Length: 128
Image 1 (cartoon, rainbow, N blue to C red):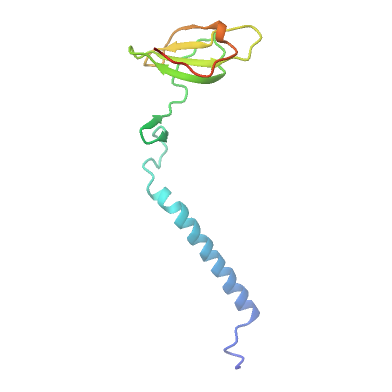
Image 2 (cartoon, one colour):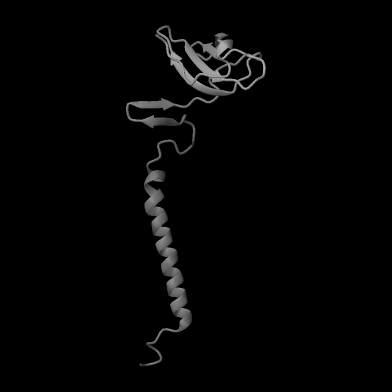
């Protein structure tokens, strides 16, 4: 074989490296390209939406005005009554029982709280 037609080791390594770079770039573009190009909120100004079709919810961080006497911990249930009041059951990890159900109006303003007897338990809330 003619020496000019035979690729050198350097050329083979460079070609392989270039091939791997191109393959990697193509894989990334194929995987993330549709997600990035289809993004409706590229500026990050809209609230995130979570859930599956039929049960989708807009996430509002810090949407409620919590009074200072309530130590918020892990929310374990949310319910809304027919007047639009939002009831949140949260679990408390305090040694002294504190209210476990906090009620807010539709704008997130604190209305009332109750349920010291549920302070360390309960996994949800139901309005009937």
